[in-house]
Image (cartoon, rainbow, N blue to C red; front, side):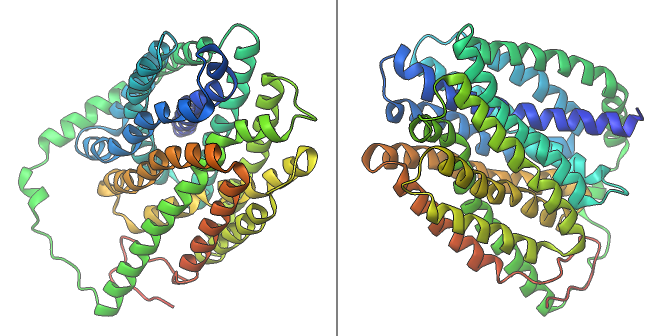
Length: 412
């Protein structure tokens, strides 16, 4: 295996672990702690909120530190740090303790997206940016699916604590191996930054002229990117976090244990994650506007028809809306990867994920409130409205996305 391929593999494993660690508690709360600690699902969900607040809050500083210090170094901190944080979470004894430790997990999880995605885009070559992001996205979504699968298995075979501790140990070992792989790169990056004149950062190069039309198009595109980022994050969080509980309630005729609930959630997540490969290829050929509208329409249709269904029909409909929810994930990352300069890319991704994960955190009390007061049918109707808003916003996208190196922008 070449060095570049090995580096890409590490980044993909990092994306897998990032989503796995942030969603272990979702299945633990749904299938274990409500019985062990005598709390309802609605009472437990808010304890996950600090972790998702940290997931968003620390994305920007993580990206800025990576751009100014070392992206490789930040990834080493990610692997080892989140591993130890997960291990500690496995020893929590109270809801307050688990909330605090999930905050630490979220703080370290915040490193991956601004840093790892910037590295994926920088390393994209013949496969194309869209395909590289799509492949990386599949690994992340497999982490989402395996969170339910692994946690459900451990609940039935040893306890929920092992679902945090065992992956945590594995992450620490991977982090040590990754450090050995990139130790020379970290040293070289530090030396290069020490040698770079500080005056370079304050300017000196002429700013290219950009027309008023190009500026207006860029402002419109940026607004659409961040609006759809926010609404898409609400959809993603509501589906990935709540799906184990949805299956626990709706699939009682076909899922009789925590392990089976985990398996069914994993199968849905795994199949739906393949949509990112299709989306990645289409982004490089058709562009983001057409692809994004298709993903939004798919979600709108399946969210709208989900209320009232159970068992096999509900499972099939869940696959439909997860295909749309997962398929849309690479699109904003693709557009930012094209628009942002390489040396600022991790910082811009950091801003994007502050927005994204702040919405993820805010979605948790919404899920708890809607489930407690009205049930999941109302949640699906809310998500159908969210998908309609995404579709309307995406229809305003230009056909061509301006690239960072382009000095003139044409929006048609």
